[in-house]
Image (cartoon, rainbow, N blue to C red; front, side, top):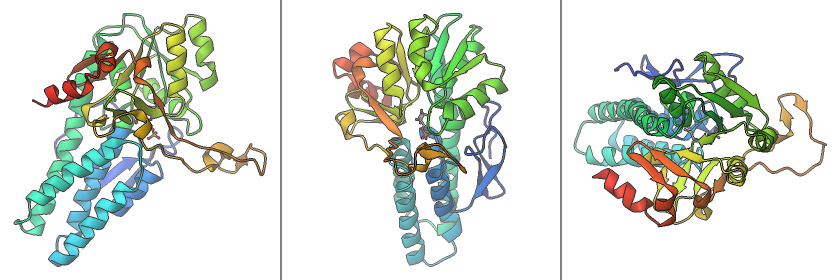
Length: 357
Ligand code: MRU
């Protein structure tokens, strides 16, 4: 498999016929890789947050399909077909919000359908090369997005981000953190303010770790400090990633993003969303149509053996929220910037269609 030029962090790697994923549940305390050899083990890894972040989930799902085909290639045609259908279903049910999962599965399904006349072993090989292709393509897309986004940030900018939209959330480089990496590579001085991101702590555990690995100045705050930091003039821009963008430009991202966007508007701070085209879902007219995952309440109640919530209290755990397009200063895509005016004029669909040409 071709080496992928990315950041220091290897989120997924193909080794000895299986896909290995860095276990994001135990970072930054331990660096361990989880090995997956089938659609079902990849679906479990996605559901359990071994791997997370919209583009990374998409890449993992593509490998899940390839692994399933490799596993079933020597069985009867009936068994191969049924097994592959089950593999697609299992992966599609792993998490609901990030559209990259369904985008990658559609791409693998389209390829599989076109290979009907090939022997199963060759079909499996072709699916594997498509998964490698999606993996490599994701890094290139993030680097292109990084270049466009970097141009929006002034030298010396203090940029806030929410959740982790870094190398760990992608095949490498990252979307929002890719913008920071590209700006620094362009010679800009930048400092990052990472919101902790309750309850799963992607900001504290993952974003902070990625930045520290590369000596990028980073300051960690709890989510409820964001307003104070903006009010005291300590933030120049916000850049976040996204899990799904509706046709009108509404943005689903990690819970708490909406709150940050409202605060940014209150303080006249630009709010940018790094968004690969694969994250735009033109089939959904508005953000109200985006399925929002509700995760297990244990994530809110405490951590491992330490429970801090009162026994018997009712708990909610929506994992994402939707920021209305009107609060988005611009989408940063691999094909260029989509400014707020374009979103407000209903121009996202035309942008995506032109970009495909
Ligand atoms: O629940 P997670 O950790 O998968 O949520 C991830 C996010 O919300 C990211 O901001 C989003 O996927 C963009 S990743 C480039």
